[in-house]
Every structure is written in C-alpha cells, then in structure tokens.
Length: 280
Image (cartoon, rainbow, N blue to C red):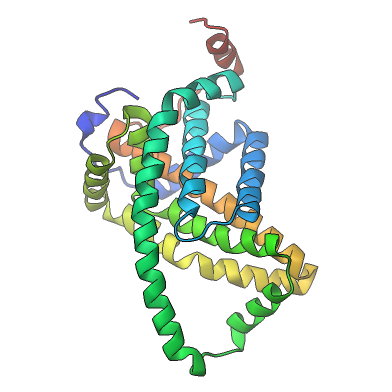
C-alpha cells in the first residue's frame, strides 16, 4: 500500500457496501480455494492443539489473521496464489506483525483478567439458580465426554470469532501490514473510521457479539445428526471459515476506507509468474 493511504484519513464508504464486499470476498476466495481450505484447517488445528489461557489466543489469532490479510492482498492484486510472493510479503511484514501481536496480547491479557474476575464473581452468585436445561444443557452434554482437543477447537474458535469480527481488527491490521507498526495511532484512525462508518462498525460489532449463539445452536443440531464429536469438529471448521470471511470483509472495508479502492484488481496467473520470476 502506498504511504498516502488516502492521506491516512479514513473515508466514508459508498452505499451498498454489504453486497459489494460479499461479492468481492467470494471473488477473492474463488481465486485460490485450496489455500483457503488449508488456512481453515490450520486455524482449526491450532485452536485444538494449543492451549490459549488469559488472552493467549491473541498470540495465535493476530499472526493467523495477518497471514490471511497478506493472502487477500496477494489474491486481490495478482489474481492467483504464489508461494514466492507470499513468503516475500510475509518477510517484509513479519516484524511489524510481531509488534502488533505483542501489544495486543498485553492489552487482552489484562482485560481478560478483569473480565474473568467479574465473570467468576457473577457465576458464584448465580450458581444456585443457573438453568440446566435448554441450549446450555444440551451443549454441556455434547461437550462433557468429548476429547479435550475437540473441546479446545470448539471454545477457542469462538474466541477467535470475537477477534476476527471486531470493528477495529481489520483497519489496524491493514495499516500495520502496509505502513508499519504504529498501533496507538492506528487505533485512533480505526476509531475515526468507525465513527464515519457507523453502520459498518455496528454490523461488525453485532456479529462479534452475537455469532457464538448460532454456533452453539449449530453444535446442538449437528450432535443429533452426526454425534457429539463430529458436531464439535464441524462447528469448529464452520466458525474458522466464518472468521476468515470476516477478515476478508475487514480487508475490503479498510481498502475502501483508506485507499478509496472499491473493486478487486483483475489479474491472471501469468501476472503472478512474472512477479515470482522478477519480471515486470
């Protein structure tokens, strides 16, 4: 991205953004469906295998979403996937992405401790009257005898959902990866961007807050059809897919808000090969 980036002043996006970005995100995913399938599987596996207590999910989520942003940028600009181009972009952005990951972890770590203390207090006060039936009871049944890896995949994918759909996530990642690390300033710009695009920000926030509920309902429904273990795995895969789709939508929002670019750039595989070989 050029250093101008719309003068580093977020702009109001044009009407029809939801339909426009949905179509554009589908176009980007169609350019390399196999790499998206690989990324979805990797996200699910990381959530299953790596414990993520006290905000440690940020150490997984930020690099993963940063890699997804680089992939989206590559597919947007070149039309097809190239390992050589991807690794070159990753090397250039690695240091800045690590700085963002470190800062985000420190923020989330302290916030998580505070939220956990409040939640434990509320849970202790309400334990005697907490309902055991309905959706909560059915979900508990699905989780009770499931292997720890599947429980991790389920719960930690829900945590990733909140990070991926957050209205500040896309703008901060976009600016960090293409302009360098300056997290506090980018947080300010993301805030201004949300103020100028309240319907967009509200949609992202609503999805971040409410999407765990349909994910839990999906788990209960699938458990009746395919069993508890398969239901947890399938839900984790669906949630990982949703997370990466929200990252794509965040990229498209940030691209239009900071660059003024409203359309994907058409390109062919030949363009990618020329870049990979050092050509024009």
